[in-house]
Image (cartoon, rainbow, N blue to C red; front, side, top):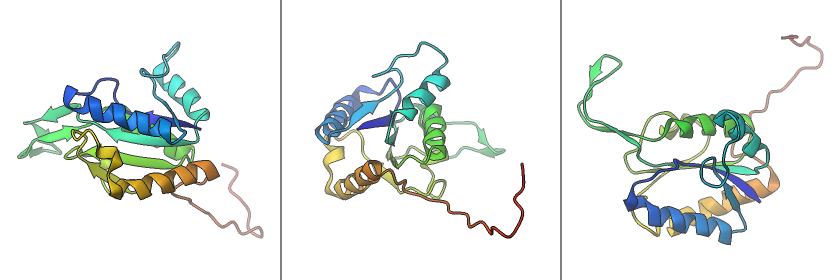
Length: 176
């Protein structure tokens, strides 16, 4: 079963071993991770490539690794008082695409990575905060059940979320 994995192509050396163990764990679960720039290489615009890869996948995992650290500046005209750690912007794009395709999504991020898809309540998927610097992070007992439930949703083709709109057949539908 093919799974889209949203992650940066570069991660700090402190995270490499854990990422490799995680990818091996996915393979041991019978899953084939697909990532633009790591397993798949573009021949056209990256966004078009991501869409094509996702068409072949039954689920998505979003991994928020630290990519940017902001120590000073403004956010909405307020001075930054504590450093902010951000992931790659592609995590947000790829999460939104997976969500729009109703793929089962598992969201994990390194401690302190924030904003966008990694803020609680943005998506109807549980967000797991993990210490990606620990090589065995993906084998933590508290993640095992979450991985199994997510994998089951991938196999069944049922997303973690479902928006169900009830349509009254006696009322006209908007043509737009």
